Length: 372
Image 1 (cartoon, helix red, strand yellow):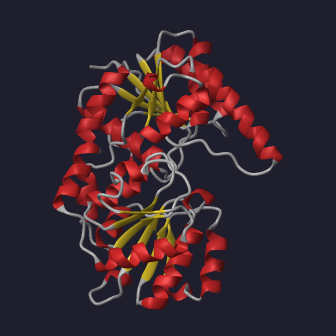
Image 2 (image 1 turned 45 degrees about the vertical axis):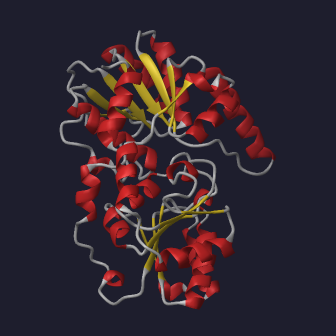
Image 3 (image 1 turned 135 degrees about the vertical axis):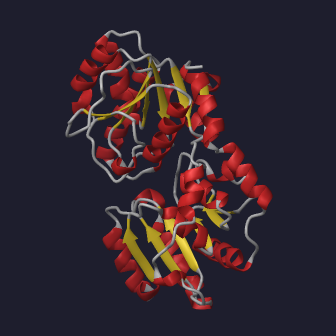
């Protein structure tokens, strides 16, 4: 898939369209901007991923054909020289670095806006520490050349300011445009899963990549405690390197018959609408889209009070239950209370839909991108 050579106002550069929150948010943003007359082109380091089939019709997609994000730098430089877009928007820190380098090497007047989607986290061990230190150095040197810095939450903005060494007021907070008409319509689609039949036990839902960040082991242990007190089931939607460990843990806890991990779902929203409770068990986040979407669909939510996003979304616990990171006991109690308690009020749903609605966020992006 390639752009057709027509003039372009905005290039959105991404590593791929793997099924993550940043990729989903950028697709929604691209669709919203296009509907406002912005000529958008989606440029991918490699055109692959679960969301590739969900690219809006008429949105040009350019495949740079790179094996890695860094390897896409020469092709991105050539593309910028050829297309000379007014603005280049990138997201995810490694892609942001490449985007800023590409603009400098291309020597074009394109404005570069980088979007930070998560708080910074570095793995354990000396090698990881060295890699993290190098990454931070690259971020500091690169981000200061951006025409605008965007963060998806107040917590991420503060993290970027500290990490990059720029004043906090120089960073714009723009929420993800994840509450859309498509979200509502997809949530109402039929759901072919036996656990959601009438009379079945309540289903606890977790959504996200099966990785350390999401801390599904804590959710599994909390579910085992819930299961010891009442009939319930746990459904985890997502793929990732921790799947084997999670299945083994479910077996150790004796709950494997009540846990289902079917992988990535093209339509997680149908599950969200019908779940008894949605649980975000993450150790860290930027602004968790799935938590926003579940709340917008009227599903009771439980979330860890991790940096950053859940407390901001739930307004200090006003719209859902917050628990400490990694605390099995409190997560268990919160899940049980959410199952027995009322669904979020219409006021909560309306408030979330307004703050994170596509039209409102698109207008904010148009202002920051200078495309009004």
